[in-house]
Image 1: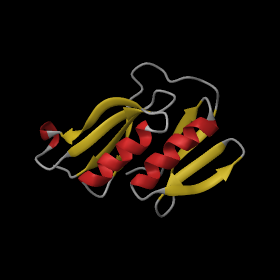
Image 2 (image 1 turned 45 degrees about the horizontal axis):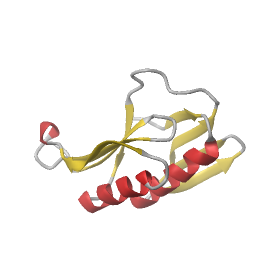
Image 3 (image 1 turned 60 degrees about the vertical axis):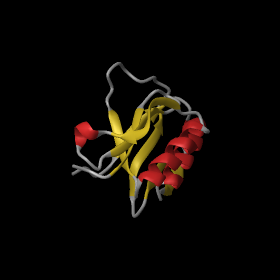
Length: 121
């Protein structure tokens, strides 16, 4: 449905450490690194971080990243928390989204809400 998602971050190096850990835990990796930008993906760059120096606005929304199972959700959450993330909903079932939906929510170093999800409705 989308080609890519771009997030404007205040500190590219700090955000890079956070997303390196998070993406590695779900099978992603850096696909691009250049002056002012880093991009992540599995087959191609789909999540872009761009240095802009502005903070997150109110009610921004979130980006959801697919994980290969519950253990990957748990690992991604732990890796993100150890690299500057903030807990916004510990890993667990989310029955309101379907019987097999398992997700964790966290905020990245700039306050963007990130969901790591396995399963579906």
